[in-house]
Amino acid sequence: MGQAVITNIIFYAIFWILLSLIFAIFWIVFMKGAYVKTDNYYLNICDSIAIESKCLRANVGAIIVKNGNIISSGFNTAPGFRKKCTDEQVCYREENNIKSGTQLEKCKAVGSHAECNAISNAAKNGISIKGSKMYIVGHDFVCDMCQAMIINSGIFSVVLRNRAGEIIKYFPEIDWNKHSIEKDLK
Image (cartoon, rainbow, N blue to C red; front, side, top):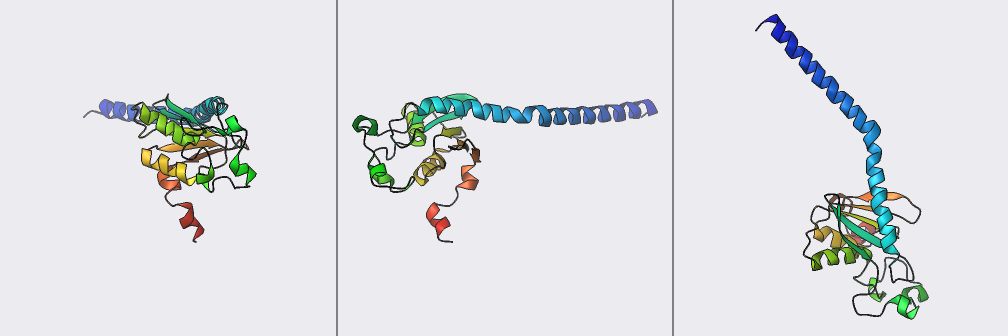
């Protein structure tokens, strides 16, 4: 090969490396915030869904997003045809000082938390949620029952905006690989 060919190869290699670096810097500086904006967009939609909650204690909303599309939603309420707390204006758990996330069987919304309802709504409509992302607003943590549903349904990641407004991201396979009972035994 001639000197000119080698010079051209070196020139183009350096050109592409520099172009790649410029693109990477652009991505880090300008696009990093795009994920936060996208998360807030979906979390704000969850706020609108949480308004429909039939719980007197906490208004929780959840959506499931796959490939940038909202494929399911849910809010906390009693299952199907059962009476809702808002119908009777009584919360058994509140009246009996039952701590949030515990003794779930004493809640009219047992099995019908926002997360579970979003998963159930997708299932009722034959929509696969494997590999999707769930967004949740309205409480400070995801209970063990909902964690199990999220894990078993194949949801890849969860974004929760707690009541203080902080955004917490979970990857169920990593963050929820032990039940709270196992964590308490340590």
